[in-house]
Image 1 (tube, protein in one colour):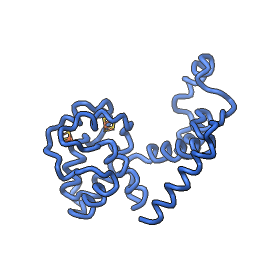
Image 2 (cartoon, helix red, strand yellow):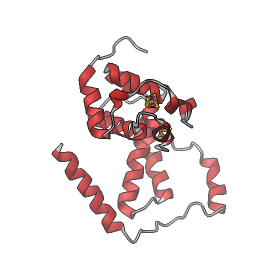
Image 3 (cartoon, protein in one colour):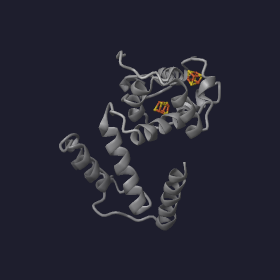
Image 4 (cartoon, protein in one colour):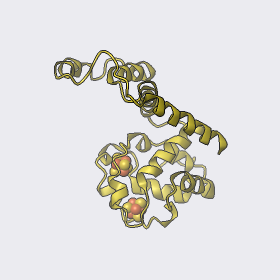
Length: 186
Ligand code: SF4
Ligand code: SF4
């Protein structure tokens, strides 16, 4: 932990509870979320540590962590929490807050991936994997990582060169517009 934390006790806790709709203040530090998290070995903070730091208002440390971007939103933590805290939604709300407050991101690749994924879904109504990969690689400047997997994925028809549009693409775009309007009202 660094020593230059901004101890902003109430603001972060209230913001996260409002956004996630979850009673983060009820966390009793049982660590069940952390012990069931498949991504925990790659996180710099465990989900239960994120909860505790939110209590303490350690905004810089939480919003600048790699953990919030490593979270895969699998909801294992949410289903294990005895206090009914939607930990996955908390992680999601922290990502939104980090972007909004222009926090010094611990790992900007997570943010690049998030943006590329949402852009792909907005354009096509579903994910167009090859386009998503291209957007992510350009934004992250991580051009050559995992390129060795491409031939195998292509040979197994896991990647298509052309996008397939969802029949509900117009509805999906409406959802994005609605979410933006809701966000502007906050
Ligand atoms: S939603 Fe995120 S924090 Fe929760 S178990 Fe899955 S990867 Fe871990
Ligand atoms: S499982 Fe729930 S109560 Fe237990 S540490 Fe995680 S968030 Fe807190």
